[in-house]
Image 1 (spheres, rainbow, N blue to C red):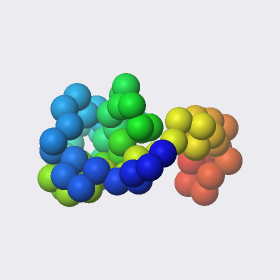
Image 2 (cartoon, rainbow, N blue to C red; image 1 turned 90 degrees about the vertical axis):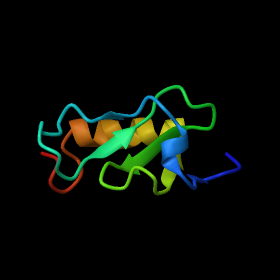
Image 3 (tube, rainbow, N blue to C red; image 1 turned 90 degrees about the horizontal axis):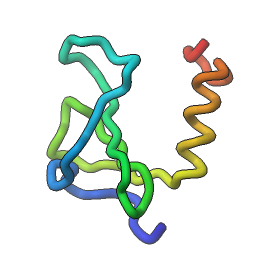
Length: 75
């Protein structure tokens, strides 16, 4: 993966927030599916800020660890 960020995440469309996020407009992480360079991740409070691009294998490992309660605060 050559680039590790998208400088202005608002240039991408189709963001979705985690199903674990509440319905209020609080602190949420949003991701974008089907990006050719990985999984873009942004802070919902800063939609015009940068998005991190996370490789698919790393993202899959992260989600699996969350589901399995392996990370602090995830269980």
